[in-house]
Image (cartoon, rainbow, N blue to C red):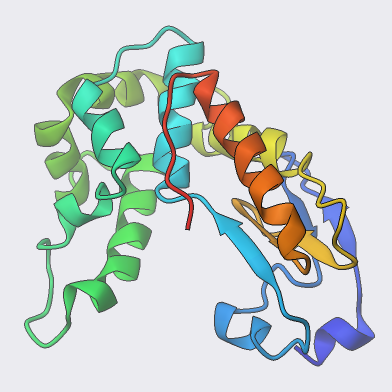
Length: 199
């Protein structure tokens, strides 16, 4: 956090349109100590939902159940029992599960991983589309991050003095911006006939 006072920067990614800045690596716990009362908009299951948008846009098949699980916000919960230590709660295990899913499905495609095999069982049509995408010159991760940037890079809280985007979330200091920003997010996803939960 002290580094953000000495070394401020902002830049666009080289391979994707994501914005990287001084606060990109500041943890959620640390952000509470910025001495600014920040509000935020965070889409539940954002990357999995962006996959639905990508597949729809490119006329690729996917399972309706996959979309429903992502819209309901319980996609990751379908994988929580995989390799879960007995002494860890499901809530604590959710982040390691997300990391494993990203590594073996969205940002890599390891057909031998337990998470990838479970995904194939649950969502066979979506899995087939991902299998096709994995050999394309532009990775799925790049496609999803560019869709994310298309939305979040253009969110501007007009009433806030301070704000910053953090990949698939936005932080701002005026509650007056919350409703309008949520409306823009929902309208963006509605173009793909996707419902979103915002927390």
